[in-house]
Image (tube, rainbow, N blue to C red):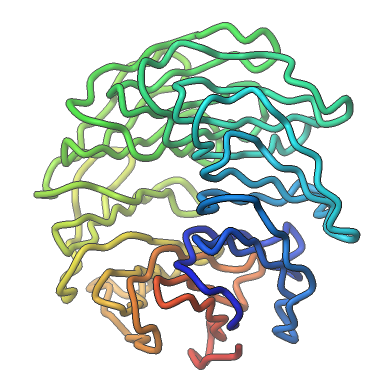
Length: 336
């Protein structure tokens, strides 16, 4: 999918998998029809890069955060834009609640804001981080919001009241990402301190410290059943961990540069990993040795972001080469 004139930093599928959004350093967001590869809309920001995009649960709206201090809510059909103001500095993370009409945003100013989308107003400002917020995530039941910050802490917030339930402060460097397990009982975090940590949400206790990486960990995720964790690092490896024990049971090698992005297929049988060596590798988790069964090398720049479609039919990659590529996830050929 060509059209961007700058690095592609963020991609997101609509919940039904029919549309794809891509955010770029060229100040635009593009909405694509996944089946045909047609660009349906070009949404124009005023300045700077688009760092984060997310579809609303009903697929009718898209939220974006970027170098502007405003959060933008776009109507997919008409491209009309509503601007939500309040952050001071870049907006680095956006996330919709799955079951409530709420958007969470995290910014360079250290704040998290909860927006009521019906009234288009900020209902709650969560101001407890002392440095930029890199990541926000709702629990599956929307009751708790997690935030990860450059101040080395993770905070767990009660969504309805805005109360900070827990401050998790065992990381030794900035926290890059936070992700809930599918059942919402656990949280994983990745950090520049070269560790992944697994937390009990109810108590805030650190269950496991996953050690082994030798550089910054850029991406970490659970598989669909929550039993396996994967992490990708600047040390050029992907590691698999047992969630129950915290044991690393496999280290994947073969890259010649940092791994920026990883994604499990919806059935949990494959993992895709994207690197600054310009390749995507696919790994087969159905076999004990987890062999690499494909290397996709169409990109001519860093692979910054990856996502499988909800039905697992497509894999999408976004790159510094200004391209978004849609792959057939079964036959492994480039569709668009």
